Length: 520
Image (tube, rainbow, N blue to C red; front, side, top):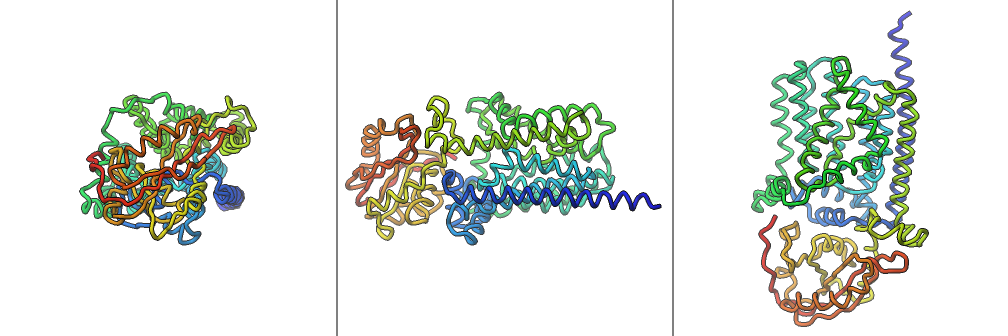
């Protein structure tokens, strides 16, 4: 009797069963995400709207990011139109592919099909995986290619052989089209190669060199625009003027992964540290990668403000640690995994329900103030399109502008034109992508424009009179006549307008421009 063949047959059946179940769950999640997006209730975030404006003006690079996200949205809009679904459609696909990549990564690392399944489930139904399925961000493609780039390393460690560094470099190259921190993956790879000699060969260095080709599109664009992306990235990574937020950042990690999963991750890391001489090499690599990323950002958060999403790429490989720890190292671990999934789904359900709870006053105002709405930056923008119809906006004669690049992006998507509008820097804000496109002075001399001002407040109506005076004095040097033509309630909570817009008609633009900002 050939026990090897029998074992292989059992493993194959087990893997097919788990992969089929995972595929079913991923399909259900994708349907949920598409329905959530298609309702249009949670509109685009300002960053998503900004990326959409990039996709309408494709280039090799953009002010603050590589071009991958713009290419992604361009393709989605070609398939589904310039709609929220068009913008976010590939986010659904990328989220699904990342979950499958986690599963097959565990398989490459020679984990059991059960551990591979649970690793994928942890990522899929964590707040990261759920909310990432309907948000068009640079994190999506970045995390997908980060996960894929670990494949050859995990497999090589278990087989005690040299990895395919060509494949690693190609995945890193693709990931660099979304976010440059993917190059940090070379750090744990080099560290591991010092201890596990099978990982080291000359191809490591040629692979690193090849992966740098992912910078080439951005270099081409930046070389023609005085290197703004590199200036911006340098300032963002070196400035320490902002207030530190160590405990806020640390606490946020419980939320993005789910509290139960994050605690299991911490305990799993300690267990691997204790068993470091006997545990699987692939787990050591996952531990090193997770620890380096989280440790680095925790250290940085003690000196400056760090956003919670900046460390998201620590988590795909950390799911192997959580699944391994839950299934092989603690009693009743499977129950804790189920509890972790249940808590994650409950958290996501509460998050996506908050806008409805607020709008229809299902709970008292003290319990659900507007400030706790995680989608407050995305709410209400659909009202703008109706408002411009009511002020007799003429698409061929008029234009829209604002003194914020975020709002200008939203006006571009939610305005009646569905085209790029204008950023007018009266507040001397730092540069942004609109500074590298034709300006009002280039294209709108003598035309009538509509300036839009928005604000979130406890009671928007009370702030209107003061802001009208501010806007008039600010725009007077540039237009013949300015008048408020529309007050637009964007979002109402407990019968109070907490987010609104003012639309001003500005006649006969004289071609003057505010002083150009030198900040990046």
